[in-house]
Length: 326
Image: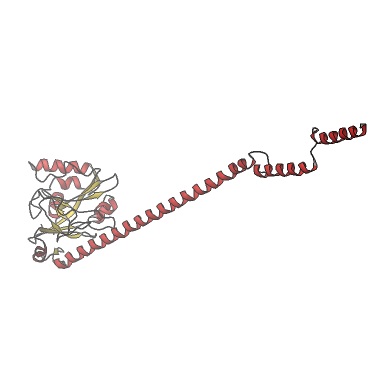
């Protein structure tokens, strides 16, 4: 009875042992280790949230890398687009300039331009030019430059800004006389003739170069031949720059008196960037000027204005002889 009782106690003690603090039965230890290992694997082996922290550290660089690639792609596409647009604009401009040059050459061929051996004046077939466009009023030739063009006069001063002699669009338009001047030119005290300043040097672009005194001094003769074949041999008097696209004084064609005309010319002389050394003296004997106008880009969108006087008037004013015709 007692033995049986002790056996029961031992069994109870043995059964109670596994429940002692810190003790894990062998079979339970395997399960526990497996459980801990699974927890660690799930947690990234570095306690709860270990993988989450690594993901935070690793995810941001990947996002930044993707952002940089997207921006690089955008910049590349924009750069290619800008190059394409620039290329198109360049080749389009060259095509327009080529078309303008061809128009000029056609008109020069139609005019059958030659030189009168006795006077040096250009001779023009105005009948042929009239057959193309009856707005023809004359021909302008600035010796020593590429300026050698027919001159037209429209109903307004925009008609020939961007139109050819036959009416098509043309980037350089045509050289034209102010619509308020009296045909065929050199009738009013001041005759105004306009021409574009194209970037490739066509039309009236060479005029802008004359703002430098050294270039101005190289030009000694300007011919204007009206549609009646009357030739005016002139020379540059002065050139000044208008810093805007308009000058209220410029479009003055006739004056109340000779003194008023000379006052006007002296006002232009005071603004000159290049001039004849004896310009003030010549002005006192001048009764006509032909004024050539083109664009100047030194101060934005301005104007270069060249005033020319008949050589016969300049010679008379300075007391010199002149073999020129007018």
